[in-house]
Length: 495
Ligand code: SAH
Ligand code: SF4
Ligand code: F3S
Image 1 (cartoon, rainbow, N blue to C red):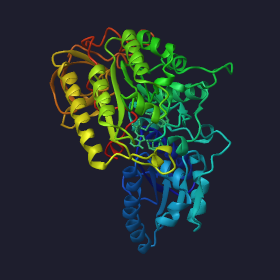
Image 2: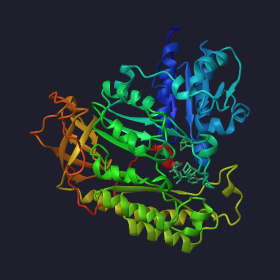
Image 3: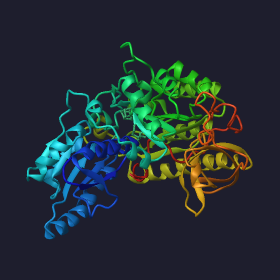
Image 4: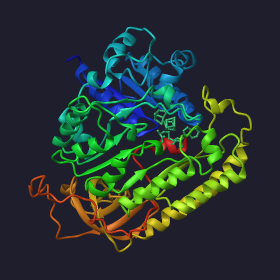
C-alpha cells in the first residue's frame, strides 16, 4: 500500500461509464487512492467521458479547462494534480486530446482501465501517457474487485456490465468504434461479482451492455448462455430481490428473454427497447436491422408475456434524409405503442460514421421543431401513466434518503422514483406504498404501516416474497410514464 492519495472521478454519458468509474476506483484503492467528491482537493481527477453526440464530447473540453485552473492552483501550492481523460472520447480521440487540451496528463481508453496504476505512475513522472490500444487480456479479470465498504457506500442498487461493445454499426453511432466489438463476460465471473455485491447489501441489479440482450457469455460447461439463462441464475443469488437489464436491441430479443418476463418474478416489468424511428425507410438508412413491423411484433409478444410491462425507447429525429412523412411515421408509432417514457435526441453528426457523409442533412431548425413535437407527445403519455397510479399500491424498494427530512426515495417495479416517509432503517427493504400524489418525475405515497421487511426479520431467501407478477397492482393496459432509465445519465439527455 502506497501513501494515501485522493482521486475524483466524474462520469458523463451512459451507465456503463458509471460502472467503469467504480471499477477504476476499486483498481486504484490498492495503490493508496481514496475517492473524494471534490476535484480541488484531489491528487488525480479522472474525467470518464461520452462521445455519443457532439455536445457530449465538447463538454469534456470545457471540463478540462475548469480542472486545469485547479491544477495550476495546486502547482502553486507545491502539489501535483494529475488530469486523466478516460471513456469514449479518450478512445475516439486518443493523442488528439493531449494536443488540444493543455493540462491533460493521461488518456486511457475504455478497455485499458486495469493499466491505470501503472499509467498514473508514468504520468506522475512527467510523461504524457496515451493508452487506447484494445488489449488482448480480459479487462474484467484484471480489474480489482470492490471492497465490501465501497459496495455498501454505493448503495443497494448496482449496475453490472455483462456485455460490452457492439457489432451492429448503426450508421449514426460511434459506440462500435469507442467500445469495440461485442464481448460477453463468462457467466461464472458475473455470478461471483453479483454474490459479492449481494453480500454487501445490494438488492437490485441492472445488468448492462451496449447490446445486453446479445449476451452470449460462456456458461459453466463452456457452452454460451443467453441473457435469459443468466438472469435466471442471478435470480437465485441470496439477497437479490430485483433484476433489470439494459440496453436491448430489437434484433436480439430472444424467445427465452420474452418468456422470462412472464415467469421470472425477480425480473421487473420494464423494458427499454430503442426503436430510433417509426419509418422503415429511415430504419434502413440507419442500418437498424429491424423494421417497424418487427418492432411492433416484439412489443406485442412482450406484452403478451407480461401485460403490465412498462416500455421505454430512444428516438433520433432529423436523421439525414428524414422527411416530414417519415417523422409522422415516428409519431404514429409512439401513438400506437404508448410508451412509458422515452429519450429523444436530434441527430448529431459524428465524425467517422457513415451517416455523417450522407447528403440531405436536415436543417437544425427542422430537427428542433420535430423534437419538440415528439417530446410533447411522449411527455403526455408519461403523465397519463403516472396519474394512473394514484390510489394504487406498489412494491417499492427503498434506496436512499429522499429530498425532505424523514423521507426515503425508492423505485417502483416500473422504475418510477417513489418518495415516502419512512425510517432510514428500511433502506434496502421492499415495502408496500399506496400512491397519493404525482410530481413531475416522481410518485409520492404512504407506506403500509403493518409491513415488516423480510430481510429485516431474517426470513430466508427461499421463503422471501419476491416483487413481481401479481404483486404490482397496475392496470394491465398500462405502458407509459417512466422518466429515468438505467442506461442514461442526466448528461446524456442534455447532450
Ligand atoms: N446500445 C445502445 C446505444 C446507446 S446510445 C442502444 O442501441 O440503445 C443511446 C442512444 O443515443 C441511442 O439509442 C440513440 O437514440 C442515441 N444516439 C446515438 N448516436 C446518436 C447520434 N449520432 N445523434 C443523436 N443521437 C444518437
Ligand atoms: Fe450504437 Fe446501439 Fe446501434 Fe450499437 S446498436 S451501433 S450501440 S445504436
Ligand atoms: Fe460511450 Fe456510453 Fe457515451 S458507450 S459514447 S459513454 S453513451
